[in-house]
Image (cartoon, rainbow, N blue to C red; front, side):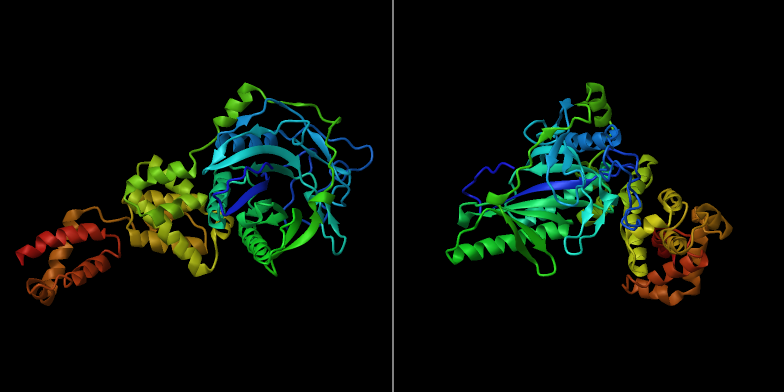
Length: 470
């Protein structure tokens, strides 16, 4: 990674992010991509374990398309002619003794350039994942070997860990929108950190998992480097690891002893040729991204925090977009999705991943259809959602069978309002005396009479007119 020195900065942080791509098969074989719960070494074959005489299959086209898609989404250019290289090293997690990657001095990265939230992108390329190796026990799990990765390299443009946190949060969200990230495995990253006090002597922290740990590792390393400088000690250019239990970075190796990867062209794979047609087909699949949705949703009289919840949870975003397509009431639907679904999840002490497992998205969407078209009341939708979360059922049938369709007959509501006022003269007298809250009782009476199927706004409107006659 290049390091452009900006003397006006206090810190410089750059990332080499490895995105686990959400393909069905591995990169060079037809082994299915495992889950974290998969039995050790259960998703393997001679190809992904580097058995003698085995040759890679042609590159997984879905993985290539996803790497290009990520690049295009941040304004990069797709490389039309590139090739895999062998990146040599002898650690146990790579049984062939090399990693296949579209990087190194002998090739161009899969996409070139781009910028995201003011951070320059230096490259983005496709490569294979090593196996999982525990250096303490020596145990190896080859399930992950050959897992398709996109390595996304930024310039050292981050000026603070708060900026880093916000950027990573949005970048991961964009990856979800693009349908390019395996959310179970997420990302891992090498983090390059330097501080002004050392004249920006760079230290690399290897293989940090998760957004939280990436930010914490950068914070810990900034503190360490500044402490060294305050003691008059040099910050050596070296490679370190992050220990999340101790919240500190630890020495791995010096840069002077860093391994020479000896990049050579991969003879067992043909060059990758990407046509203009393929590039445009991929570009056409890029959806409306979070920044655009925030701007669109701001037109619907929703608070910024409500919009952020709708945008940040794809589950909610997709249902809300369905409601917009059907021209339903965006404010009422938006508030219901933003408030009621998180409320139910919080009560159950679960999250959106648990919600997805319940397979009730179609039923929630039907509930939203009924609410947004004023066929059911908000309170009815609330209670129905609670029941639906406990047990899946046919929402429309349930609403009809229990006579929960919202009262549309204003004359019926007027009759109920008149009766409630007649039966409760004290509420009327209190209202005349200036107690504006006294009529809330009348609204409650009407809502009980209609079993919650009257729209409160309609009841209030009718009540405001009818009470003048008493």
